[in-house]
Length: 274
Image (cartoon, rainbow, N blue to C red; front, side, top):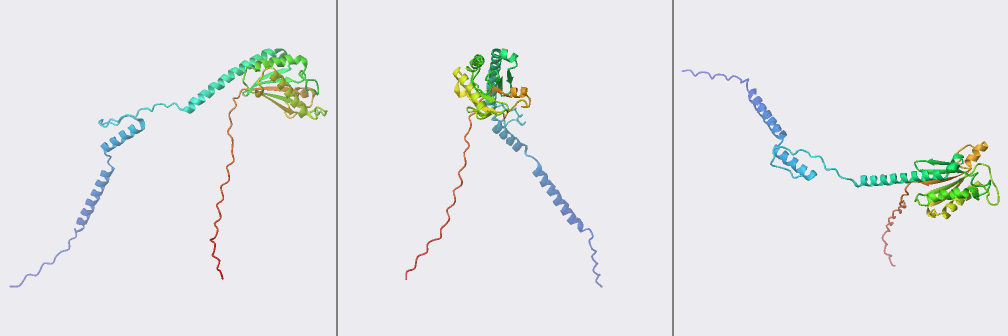
């Protein structure tokens, strides 16, 4: 009996489905893992949130509550800087009130001369300035106070004596040169006139440590020195009552230079003896 021929095997054209199914399975597993990693653990998140709230606000966290504790507004803290600023502003306000009272008293004692245009009282942010024309204070080229004005200047000193404001007395001249044995230039004349007023204030009870005298000669005119009226306006004595509170300064030192590193010396070589 003749043997049957072995049937020829056909190629399987659908074998790619196995690889494709494996790829889809791996891709599905990858997305499952990624989703698991991105999911927040609510319990751990609640514990972390309660711990941070308790640490930063010093509030006992309620871990048993299913909801996160509501954020409570922070308790306002009174800063030392704000307190110091308010205290300093209060001191300045008190100083301004005292300065206004001083200006009012000076206006009263100098009213006749103010009406004549010989005295001006100016209030600025720095304090009160009393500007006195030197024609009523001194004779030309002299530094002695006119007897008629000594009483008025003592009245100003009586107003300033009870206060604690620093006082600067400035002497000013016009640009007409002077050359005498007593006053070689306008510098000496303006300085001595300011010092004369200072001595009268000190003798009238104003504390000497509050007084300063400066001579500016003709370096700070208020009017051009072209006409006689302008020169007369520039010849003046200015009394500045300073309302600023003096601050204690800090000494600025020079840092010492860094020490130079010692230069290394080569080791000494033994001297070979013959």
